[in-house]
Length: 471
Image (cartoon, rainbow, N blue to C red; front, top):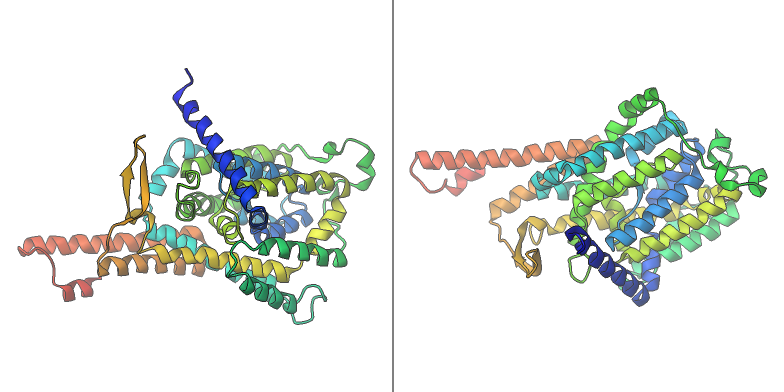
């Protein structure tokens, strides 16, 4: 007789693949469009890391493509595979070598893996108040909007930097986005991606990154074994220490909060089960992040994680199953194989992709993520009244929620706003988390003081006006 874990895994995988296939056959264009929803985050960082010689582009495409396929098969919903943003920012600013970037991803993956196996990630998820989680999600969404405006759209003018990338194209993308609002299955991202590739083909800037031999295989190797151009790295102890102190420790809270805890919470909100497969737990997402990087980083692949922003983006543009990111993974793998022979041409096309189109896609994704805050006081996860089924698992009927009084509503909303404000002010998820948690604990302490005073005075509650002064 098969072990109990196997008895659960096999039916789950079977149900997931049925859902993937059924969803793709019923709405293929929406799934393909949704798969491209996170390009606004992926392309700029991947290209910049390639041009600074910090990652191997063929390895990145091959291994992140394989990670996409794995995520689609394992989870059955469009869990994204994104760059580790803090690691990428440091690597670009300090022009990290392949070994330094790889060491950063490996350290983060090892720490997240240990915390997942020991249950620390699950414990952190359980004790983190939902208003703080929602605040991190809203803050991440607004950060995407700010990033799109400052990095992608602000440098543009009405006529430049060239005729295929300017504010006129951004305006056209906005008009097209508004026109597709009544048609949620319209393949907006797919259309924008194809348009961007056509425009990039006209521009095709030359790309000659530093450390060319370690990042882009030369054309002269096309007759030999191309896989010899995928590096096998051996970072030294000194490199691991340098990577830990400069990039990995800054990335760890971002990965835990946004890529694991917030992503799992968003999956629960966006994909209620049924008809979707069960949303992945924080433990499974943590182990997935660990697995992806403990394999790919040794070969020069870009450090990657999951993320609530990418999930919101892919959902916004039509993805409803793992089939969408399986398709994206296959595209990446195919492009990675092509890059082994034609690396410079591929980088030229990707580098020439219009920032105007990417910027509008990132803005739309940011708004989609930020709007999850609206459910804070209506049907947030901690308000749902769960019911046990025949297998002993708790499910939600989509209707039953716990009611809140006016004070609870104000306090929850205030914790969310404070979390968002701190996150945006310091541009750090960890700071937002700590400030939001402190605010939440402050409200709890205030309530405890009120109850203590009420007991001392022999009353059941404190007058409404006095509670207002304390809160």
